Image (cartoon, rainbow, N blue to C red; front, side, top):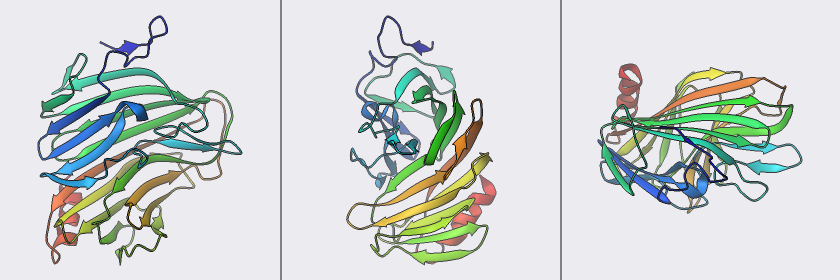
Length: 268
């Protein structure tokens, strides 16, 4: 059951405007206004990822001399949703209700962002979120950069650690500056007040350079993670770029969170 545009109708025309998914230790919300990207990440009942329109998740592209298009960025041009296919507990599913409870959910989507074909998947298995993004240029596309993943983590996150390629640690201080800012394969962040961490792993990277992982230390709003890729690149017609990212929240205390993050990385 693949939902295609028929007689001018959008592939999500019969869907609710928002779907909340309860899956193991995770609860997320999927948002129609941002073309079915994530909004909200809860772990064991604790809010880790913001649920506020404007604090976008998903992927977005900054076209040279044009601006942002994609996800919730509609100020220049809207992303065109072409296909939307849900799988619940491994089976092709129909139109979801406003709340879905399951052991595994996968949402496969295809869209057009100007002249870029975007194939993406969100998969939740109760303990981790995996996002896969593949972009193919229909014609030449000049980019300032693209974000192949965005996560607006709450400001309760206080610490970060680059686990790979170098064991570098630091703190969030409401500096309004970017932290990490490196092509890091594994980064962990931690909240002392929530006693929760999040491990982010880049599992696959194809033709992304220049690339870096950024965390915007923004006061009173978020600690926003961006996978910033294709910096200053021009994609030729037919050229492809792809990324697979895994997000794994975990419970920990202030003394053992880095050790637990490393263990999660080794055992995932």
